Length: 180
Ligand code: PRP
Image (cartoon, rainbow, N blue to C red; front, side, top):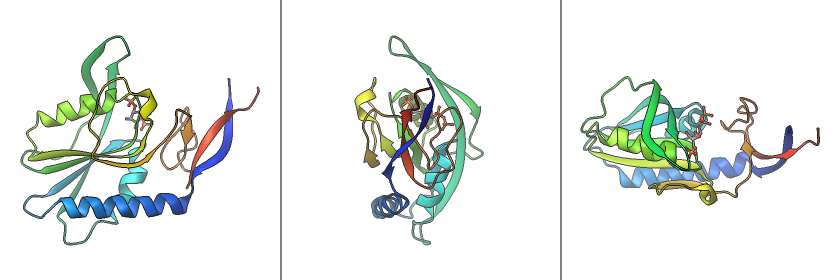
């Protein structure tokens, strides 16, 4: 089955407005007693993260780092293992950590990642996701900041891909079967 772009789910303006609100919530919750290590999970979250951090106040001690991971786990058996393709450059010990993800779906990646980073002894660990496809959840996972809850549909754009395509769109769109 092949897909083509369908409707706009969130426009550039809607995304911008929501990112600004999330940044406000984050800025309210973190002080400057410790650095805030913002950890982006490649590849999809890079787009969201760069917009989000630029809405944070300049007096907040923000550090940025990225990880590339894949979770091994499926509906029957969650191995609890995250395979790391690219690890953080800096230690997160005793820092306030904010994981930034583009989407939480089954929750397996995020729950494994939270456990992995928790074991590195951060001062605190919170998670911010742009999209929450909550109907597909297979494991309970804590999300502290959520941009939008979305239905169980294929979505692309603003970092999200389908088979590697459409990450570069400014808006988030749904896909539809192109009948081919
Ligand atoms: C997406 C997303 C999460 C994961 C969520 O990454 O960024 O990491 O899937 O799915 P889950 O809740 O079912 O575990 P993906 O593997 O598509 O990588 P990408 O960001 O490089 O596209």
